[in-house]
Structure formats: C-alpha cells, structure tokens
Image (cartoon, rainbow, N blue to C red; front, side):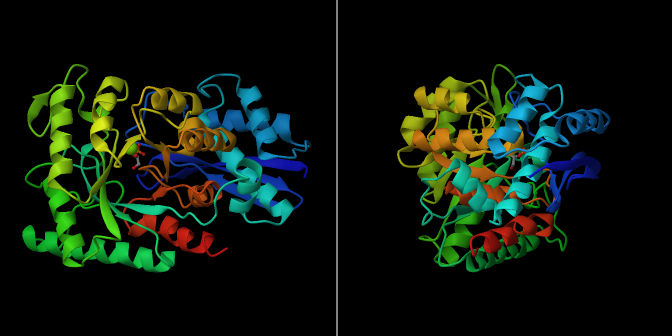
Length: 398
Ligand code: 2PG
Ligand code: MG
C-alpha cells in the first residue's frame, strides 16, 4: 500500500480547543483521524504542538512518506518516531504523530479488508481473549479542573459491567444519568443543570463524598448492585500544592488523604476503583493506599501516562493494580499497544480512555476491543460523548 498524499486540518474539540485532523491518501481512498486534548494533563505526556507547527510537521512528513510503502502499523510508526527523534515528541508533535498513526491504521485495515479492531488485534494482541468485554466507565458528576462545582474530585463514574449487549448497557447508563439529573433538578430547584467538560453534572454539593451517595441511591433504588458500581478519578495533581493536598477545605498530608480514601471505601460498598488518588510524583502516596484496597482498583493515569516503561516501574513499586491507556499521552498507536501489552503481562487491569476535549474520532473503542481491555472510559452518556457509546455498540457487533 503506497502512501500517495498527506494532509492536515485545524479542527476544534468539544471544549472549543484547537486540535488536528490528519489525512492519508492511498489507492484505497482517504483515511482520517482526529486527536483529542486533555485539560488535566500529566507532565510526562507527549508534547502537543500548535497548528502552525503541526502544519510544518505535516509538510516534513509528507516529503518523507509520500511514495513509500509500509507493511505494518509498527513499521509506519517507526518512520514517524525516527523523523521526530525526541523522547517526548516535541519536535513534530505527539498530536501530529498520533493523527497519522491512527489514519495509517485505518488505511491498513482497509487494505487488508478487516475491521480496525481486528487489524490491531492481529498485529499487537494475537493472544487476547475475545470473550472478555470491558465495563463502561461513564462520568456522571464532575469537579476538579473539569468543572466549577467546587468539588475536588474530578470525576464520579458509574461503572456498568458488560451484559448481553452494549445497547442495553448504554441504555442503562443513559437512564441512570437522566434519573440523577431529575434528582438534582429537584434538589437545586432548577430546570437547567450546569455540566462539566465531559457533560457530567457540575453542582456545588455538600462535600466530596455526597456525589458518591447520590450515585449509590441510584444503584440501590434500581437494585443494580450486581450490575453497577462506582469509580472515582480524583486527578489529585490538581489540588496538590507541592507540599500538601487541599482537599475538602482541609490541608492534608498524603497519610491523612489516604485515611480519607479508606473511609470512603468503608462508607460505600459500591466504590470499586480510584484513579490518580495522589499527585503524579507522589509514588509513596499510591504505595500507601494500594495494600488497603484488596480487590479494588488503584488506577494510574497522570502517574503512568501510557508509557510501558513507567507502567512497569509503578507496578514493580506496587503503586497501582490498574492503568489508564490514552493514546495521545504517548503519541503513536504502536506505543499505546505496547503500554497495553506491558500492563496485561503485569496483570494490571486496563482502562482505555478518552480525553476531556474530544472529537468525533472513536478509535479508542477499536483499541479496547483489540486488546480485550477491562474498561472503557468515555464520559457522560450525552451530547458529543454519545459518539463513543454508539461506537461501542457497533464495534462489539462486528
Ligand atoms: C482524565 C481525563 C479524562 P483529561 O483525567 O482521566 O477523563 O481528563 O483529558 O483532562 O486529562
Ligand atoms: Mg484521569
């Protein structure tokens, strides 16, 4: 498959931030991919460049790649990585590299006449267990950097375990989201509710635990205890001052914050997972919490930034038992797949995730199926996030 042309467009994500759409032309047609952006970013993430630089990178890649043929995604990505030549993708931009890497994966799938997930499965995860399907992590209430609600915790998620089909699971998530909306409308005597970046409700609730109670009420009222649970993304770097954590109006050290979380897990039987409970460099904080959690998940996101090496390090230090995978944190499809493989070899739970600033590109769903991930994190079941929920229904029918 010979690459005939490369283009790039400036587009805007769901937060109105500038991002890129990359396009590859082959004899099979035009293949596109657009790249999301994060607001609460880990400091070790691949560097995103602005559009002026992205255009220059695209021009350079065009000279390098047009007329060439690549027989795998890894081989194509290697050409991108060699061209960039930096550890953090700061020369050509992780956003540009990822856009072309995904577009190439689509071109390659078309050439082989297979769906995208199967192309990725064959190249990167030949031994994945296809009977395993991910739980949905749907973000229903927002705080932290994603909202003005005054809550310190960034995301309160409803976890829906997979049932017979995703259409029913998505319907359930939508139903809980709507019913919670009705409860909040009554509570705040308001017809219109403020929303956070991922369309979760963003309201000034009494304290950081109250959203957990509200989600619990929804779960118990419908007797969904076997089907649903609750997960948090604390994104603790956002309230770490460098010395202490400003949490719930108090100034806490890591040990005190750890106690707060232990108390949360004691008070809520449905709470099953906590992401980034400590700041991205506070490995000791993570190590303190993990042994207290038993089977529950301590998830690295800003801590691990989809980097296979960093994931290995954090698992060896017993800081986490689960990990978030966001392709744009690392910058190519192959490296995101390597991070997934590493996590799976280390027996960590894996959650493939969107970003707070999203586009209509639903690549992450194919990545989740290809790798047999344990979770997909896709925001609230509403508005622009519906694209990913609908793709979940489709990709698992293929
Ligand atoms: C997160 C993500 C997605 P952001 O922290 O996990 O929910 O947010 O894209 O802002 O990093
Ligand atoms: Mg996170």
